[in-house]
Amino acid sequence: MSCRFGPTTADSPRCRRAALVFAACARSTRPITFAICSNADAYDRGVSLTLVVMAAGLGSRFGGTKQLAVIGADGEAFLDFAIKDAMAAGMNKVVLIVRSDIEADVRRHVVGQHPDLDVAYVLQDTHGPKREKPWGTGHAVLTAAPEVPGAFCVLNADDYYGASTYLALAEAAADLPDDRALLAGFRLDQTLPEVGEVSRGICEVVDGELVSLVETHGIGRREDGSITSTDPEGRLADDAVASMNCWVFPNNLFDHLGSGFETFLTEHGHEPKTEYLLPTVVNDLKAAGVYTVGVVPTSEPWVGVTNPDDLEIARRRINDLRS
Image (cartoon, rainbow, N blue to C red; front, side, top):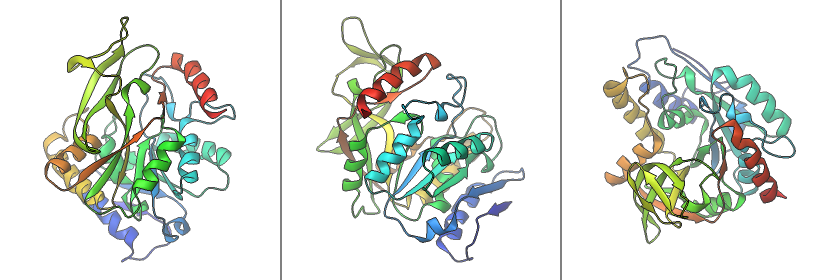
């Protein structure tokens, strides 16, 4: 096992967090290289809320590097709007979780869009046993542990969340206790594509607190105007609260992710497609009384793409929202 951190010391917080990540690799029988590419000075500044962007997905249905698909009028991808809006909301460190095969392309893109921004890059595929399909969103977040000094906001690279979402999360995250997480809650009818079906985390919320989150599939608008799902089957309210995987966590989440991933590898490490998913981890931690989860409502519309045919629709919507 080898590690590249840049300047650091053996007892630094970066090394202690790295130990959490390495511990989760212990069950692998293959050689593992864990690579983190960053400017060490960014870590030493000490930030209040780090933006962690999950950009290592394969984009199988899209047929290419969806993370870098041009959406904005000035060549922006979805992740560029996330970075701009998060920085405007007061977040002042960015960590991008990518794959080795797209790292160079992502670096070139980010430098072109944000030439003065200090960005840390984490390579998800260099952590844990090797397999073709990434190990899932819980694993992705775990790999960022050495680069995150405190509380953090984590989200997908290929979704548009809207500027006011970051402002609301940053305000709600002030003085975040160690037993508290936050979730951006979108209106379901603001998260549906113009055509086709999607999966969403449908939330039960009482007095601003998350009670349950159920991954729901086959959600779409029908000819009669209703919204229904196929798994579980049923009708959904337009104003149902939907999760788009945009969270804020205290730093101790990495401890829970590390121990949980070890258990996951023991039980599912031989399965080529089973994923260690962040929402599942959060549900388990909430059920165990480790976290309470506050839902921060947002009225922002979601924009995303699943197939290349969705690009023109997304570009039109982004142009309307950002103009």
